Image 1: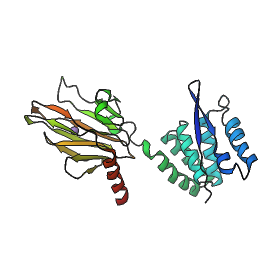
Image 2: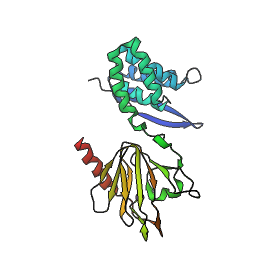
Image 3: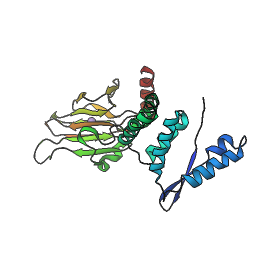
Image 4: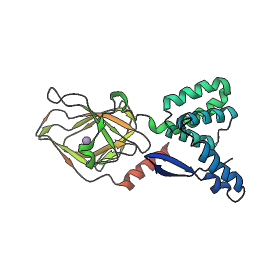
Length: 268
Ligand code: MN
């Protein structure tokens, strides 16, 4: 297989990212120094960088189109898909580009390209917060979370029971915590988007998917959050109760969380 590894170093110029390509020298510096120099300094250094004349996004779209047309769907194509995403080509746009190109470049080529595009864009599913939207960074509770989470209030607590959509970035989860109440209370989670986890202290972790409902009785130590490679959203609310309060405890251990994910990887 034609294996190409691209390495890039980033340098900041006036707030803008300029990518320095070094793959040519790393892969072929000894075997074909001229090719390596042309690749790094001319193709990527002088041509790709002419952003004033044609944007990086447009250059990525062109490159993806040409590679699909030529049937070059190896790791270099994967690199250009990743680059296209980085240069602002959205998932919807990539789907449209490949659909359009399919008629000119060939149906099987588009199929092969889609298989790789699905993988490259997978992590973006649910990034918009899903069904109920993303809301704002959950700054007030950030210290009780590992990774970034977002909160979108859905109801006004002055008017009725408070409901909020909580979105976790891939790998994000909240600390172990307890919803206390003298009676009633606890928490209910309605899962809407992506894949996540729920675990009670001393119990097995439960995989969560859209449509799952979790009832967490008051007084139970637990955590919830996203899977390692997926955004995750749930609507959360506390059922009516007396003397409700939340107690935040230690973070979910990285090794423990990693082991959970590895076990799931083996099951799939
Ligand atoms: Mn909870």
